[in-house]
Image (cartoon, rainbow, N blue to C red; front, side, top):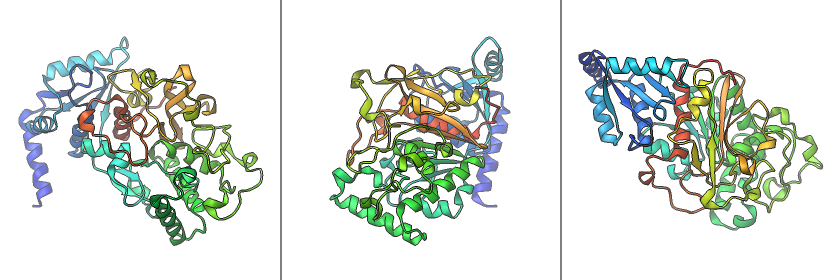
Length: 421
């Protein structure tokens, strides 16, 4: 008998001793939870052991109800996660209370730990990206993939995909003006060109388009995609510019198509419409989608508010907005937030700064799958720049901004109900 099977049997025996006479409640409100981020990790860890978890939407900040076992309690203690052991009767009372039509709450069953892939360039460190950073901190396992794996259809092996802060347009992040002489920029450009050639493409922009199309097909086929910062708008721009050269000579060796703005096909995008592309290679911006240069918000008052949905009728956006506060600190990035008027009408704006007319956190359906776009680079580093030190999440264990990322990680584990909004 192998070790893995023996461990599973021992775990099952431990649970049977309790006979589910009691439950573990992991509260997620501001007052009771010491480490919101690691609480997601404990929940994922429990799902990995083929046990079901109830996600109590809008109950004490989106709490988790787990079967009681000494091994789960110990895991909570090791990770510094606050928990309460409650009786079977108390658990039933909570579930009955949540089921009442009079309250905006719902219990969603999480069934299986999703297999996670992070699309990221080779050699990138976990702290280069907020998602890999919080997955590592929460101890949620993930695998990294890049262009070659995507083009070889390896996305089909995964339930959830995160897009690192990639530039899918082939313009190397629009860093040309400031960093074109920097060693790291020259090296990354060279590596991208070599990889594109290896994959059979003459240009990086052509290779990135092929990758974007594969990712699109993954979502349409039922996948879950999450993207932050420049991966959001550059992904949609690449799709809309299929067959159109929007790159200037310093990026791909030849000129762009004359009048390429009029050739953009917004029907091909996931989230955005009617945007104007930034033609100048010297401007650190892709298009009018991003609000970075249009913002008039002082640092001290830069917050965005989360929308409230009907937990019973719209469990999907409710899951994605679970938090212990409805007001979340803003943070910058190459793509900080999205111009409200350039978001398609069928896309939900789940987080916004209404005063400034910008959306921060959006979600939509594409085919059989789902996507979520989250503006900004790092929820706990307001103006993260190239070369800045990594964020120490031990200093931010209750971060509301990071909780939104982890809501998306658990989302594919849930039994889905049809969305009404």
